[in-house]
Length: 162
Length: 77
Image (cartoon, rainbow over all chains, first blue to last red; front, side):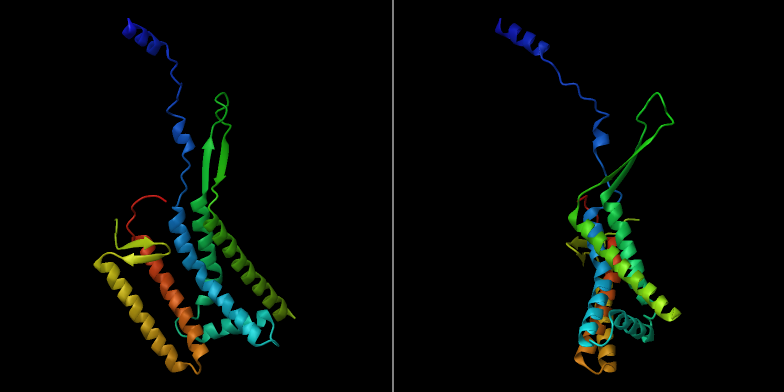
């Protein structure tokens, strides 16, 4: 008797309705690995950060010179050095931009959906940014370095124009 | 082609194969050569340090870029 009751109870149990196709939609994979991108990103911006640190040190030891003048003199020094004369713009622009790209690809997830089955032409794009503090910090630092270089180029052009 | 020349420990890459060790030794040898070259041309210690650290960081960057593309990938983060 007890076995029959138990079997009846088991048959009447409500099974949760799980759609297995929903699960993959919840997995949001970024294009690049976040920790690998952060590791390379640190190396990509440590060189321009050191360069800017040197500029600051130069500025504080030569008070009569302006910040941009000090940077300009360091760039001139680089240009005189054999084999690394082309490194100035690469270090201050290309490396931070590469850092921005790889870290952005590591925290962003983009997906395109068709939200309305009755209207197949209508598409919806979802952009998800994952909160990875190290990657976001590297992106912000790289943006600051690029901004500093652009400000330097603009100031130099204005001063040359005069 | 999958290359397993390096493994990553934090932000540093350690060699785990003969090719990886050769790259590390070459990078170290070039860093020593750079230091000797800069030391011969510079007139002060600060001059040596500023230029050498700058070159050392660039060597580290190139080494890391090589290691980034040739590291053993165990899994995700």
